[in-house]
Length: 265
View 1 (spheres, helix red, strand yellow):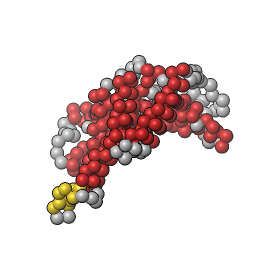
View 2: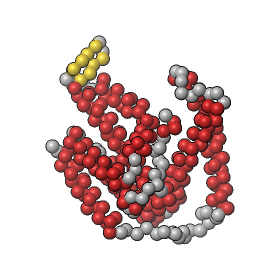
View 3: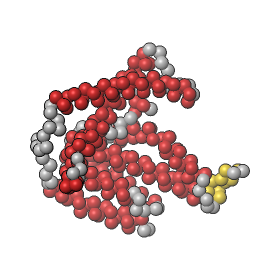
View 4: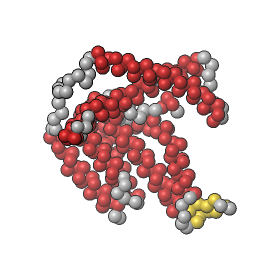
């Protein structure tokens, strides 16, 4: 399961979604996340599914790559569905002692599991189609007005960019550690939960050491390049809205109207 983590990774391919302004993509993702809470029936999920499938097709990101990292949230999906299934009052369909399954519980379990899955997939599309550098520039541009209140927007954007940039590096380092431990005879896939937790310790300790070393080396590299000594920073490629970027805003408005309409059915 640890090898299949792709969340936070960038998928390099030339598509219309990749070429969009990162600020537009961030706003679109925020609108998408809010829209998931604007309906309480499955008609809304039909509209969201059409929108999300369209985005995935246009982005050219392979579906197996997207759902490859979903294995990491399987436990959270099961945990959420379990509590909604057995602890929701309503019309009882099956009962044994203190355990009961209701029609409303089944509906709520499926509904919440789908919402969680759509939240993860939709938000992951932002990192799949946007580089960490573009995300940094988008955050700094969208929240630049906070500089009036002396908020270090650039520093916060840089920290977020470095966190996203470290995700694929740490995943690659983790896979290397797993291969090294397996070559030494460690069995990390079989056994009970206790044995797997002990095997996980042999992975997390060297991974933390490697991450600390990388962070220290990155700090030295930034200091050697005089990062933070200048209050005025220039951009190699400044962000500019194009016609296709501006056209996305009315499309977002149409999407929200469609979600609200579907939620009232």
